[in-house]
Length: 116
Length: 108
Image 1 (cartoon, each protein chain N blue to C red):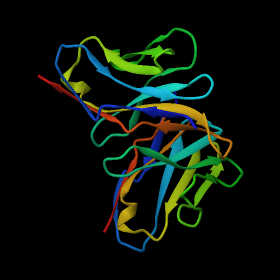
Image 2 (tube, chains in turn orange, yellow):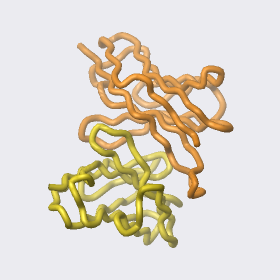
Image 3 (cartoon, rainbow over the protein chains, first blue to last red):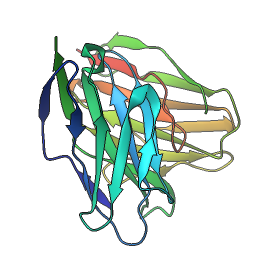
Image 4 (cartoon, rainbow over the protein chains, first blue to last red):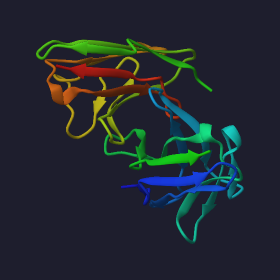
């Protein structure tokens, strides 16, 4: 089964500094990887995905993620953090489950706290 | 991208009752997915709903507890039956990539 791991429960960063939220994956074959953000009392918003092609994927709100096959990682990055980026971030991988259907398998989530 | 809406956005229910959550997509999608997010937890897939066939449930979820309808390619419902406090969660519907805003359910 495919899986993703988010090793950090929380990441703290000062506004204006670069941020990284880590994700590692365990898949057989080529991974389809995703990042989502969840703001308080809001739904899950799609940020970006990697299917194939360039290892650096650009997404919404200035976020980008780097796919690294040798390190089996897909870290989320932003050059300059904003206080408004404070939220819960989920990494996910698409897999074909036992039911035969494609589905998303989510990591445990990382809370990002950006201080003024 | 698909725009997905859910009703209700939140509800407080009594133990033993049932709640039906509606999910509307602004475009036709082959598969719709229902996830549960328990407090402080990640998302877990409940079932996958294809139009015109019975939903396919993940391990640990059963049709009697979470009946799903999928009458067309833009709409689905999830019912949480015979609720208990352990069913207090956020329930999200989605396509393969996009999600609705979620339904926050509190069972007393």
